[in-house]
Length: 183
Image 1 (cartoon, rainbow, N blue to C red):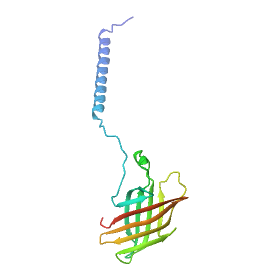
Image 2: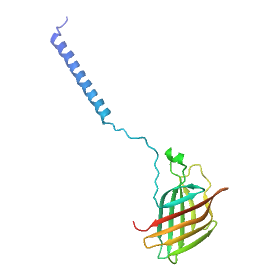
Image 3: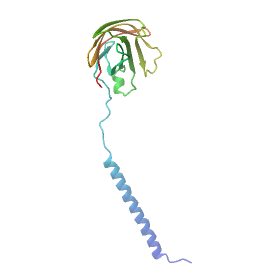
Image 4: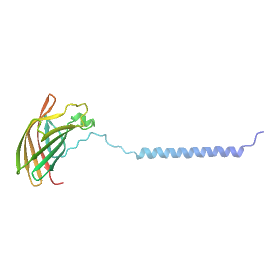
């Protein structure tokens, strides 16, 4: 009624043990490789990008400039693009999404320097905020005076006075920007 399982039973136990030891060895080797292969990095401290193309003071606060570029529309007409990050320092450290403000100035220049004056809502000088969560009120320009110096390989803009308005909030904006023509 009972068969003698002596050798077969011993072989099954041996194979089971061998497979278990093999699996355990493989598991130990995998865990060791993962533990030793992981690289530890310093914690992220928050990054800011600054184009190092000047400074922009926005209501008493220095903003990080992301871009200052000039576009030649023809031999005498230029369009200046300025992009700055409006986030507070805490938002930058917390890695919140950027809240950029874009200033765009389009003008004709008839020489190596020009003093420009703009009235409120002049379509040649605009302010736009992008990536602005919870903000439904756009920025507008209430007036500005700007100096532009034209060189062979760069333009320099000095914003002497600019009034930026968002609803009932009016902020003074000043700054000096360098637009490098050599790429």
